[in-house]
Length: 198
Ligand code: OGA
Ligand code: MN
Image 1: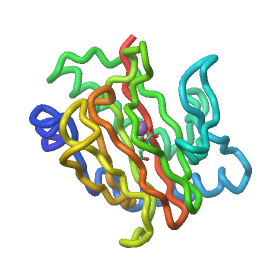
Image 2: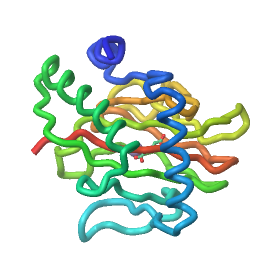
Image 3: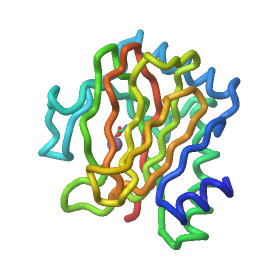
Image 4: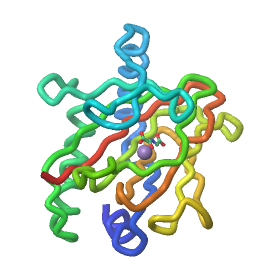
């Protein structure tokens, strides 16, 4: 947690391998796979509210939102970790984050998400993005790396490529960092979400 906070302080983003222990992450993997088989995922859209549209040229993942009043034990355990993180972020950076909204995401083979920022145009509510990867056997060649450009506001120049390995957490300032998901060569799972301000 301390390293994550000092990364955010210094550069606005952080990658924490092993944020979740293997057993806990593996339970979320199973749950995600089961929900997928039960047909509980929906095509992800672009935009918000009335402007929400399906754009296959921009993103091809499918999502299932976490329901705050209907969480599994595994989901609760992860959200408790994020709750400690939320409090620390507020304590250190006075961000006034008051809640987390998140969803499971599945990128079927060939799916991607083109370069974007996570803050919707004209809104200020998504302040910090947190992504937990759920791919136990991820190998180079499986694709689906997260490409994160490391200069705030820039969609060019230096970037990091983050491997979506099970248990790795990525965190960044949602309005500052352009990022994209490279095409997945194998099914790719994660929980993506945002700490929000009012
Ligand atoms: C998103 C997103 C990145 C990832 O859902 O907004 O950028 O690595 N996801 O899954
Ligand atoms: Mn994003």
